[in-house]
Length: 368
Image (cartoon, rainbow, N blue to C red; front, side, top):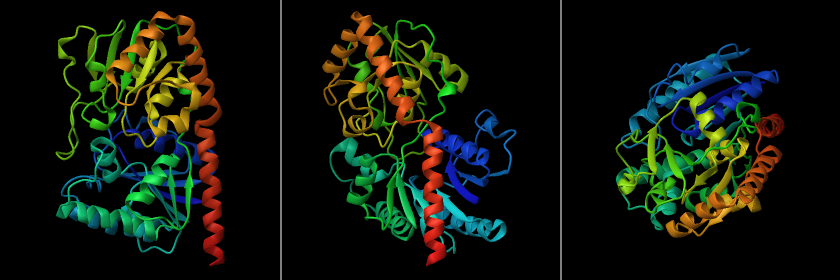
């Protein structure tokens, strides 16, 4: 099967794309990949080297959640249509909403990784204020969802959010994201620091919870502090001068693997999270996962995470204190998280699930 896939290079969608594309090509599929947004760095693109039946095209079109993206979306749709006409794929897998409405006579799968409305509600506990841009954005998302052959979300939480804030797709499926366990080091010795990884500028990641209290272990915070767009910017605070809080900015994949491997525990502080690849990567590194008590984490991690009260900095500090003073408990939760990740969230499981979906929609299209 020849799959035309769209992606972006900002955040976890790029890691998800890497795992899925690599697996599909290994399984004998042909993949044409087009990225939108920021052109990837050389390091980001190194995984493509040596892939078999694969072609990659990078573009700089703005993403649909970015302010002033209207013209870029129309131009990128025209560009994508020209690629469909040129390469004649069997299926379009879009990791953006807009391209579900592409006028192409092939199955179109849209994956709802996140969206502005559910993000805003998750952070601010109310609907975003109306504006001309937001009305345009809602229309783009709803059209893409309603015209897609099938819609996928990485969690039931995210699928329910799409249905609540936009439209109910005709065909929908939950397919969990997955990572290759062999990219991580679960056997490494653990050191005395708590790790948090994520976009520091993103209020949904709520990194600020870690900076509000002192902790018995050092807290290492890794992630971009610069928003790729001017809208919906957040902040993490500066640690209030606390000596145990260290901001490290963005790190290479190899360096991040080392940080996961040796972290005593991982702090998953998000108040809004459609899935959360960073907690998964930590779990595959056998970190105990200290998680905010939100629906997504409860759905995905069950009793394999050590929860703190919803958005409560005191409870988070108490959880870190408990795990730091009890190595046996910390080891137990590291083992729980690791086993859960290996059982439910591997790249192979994700690729297999998408292959089944691709075959299903292709058969439906042929019978229509």
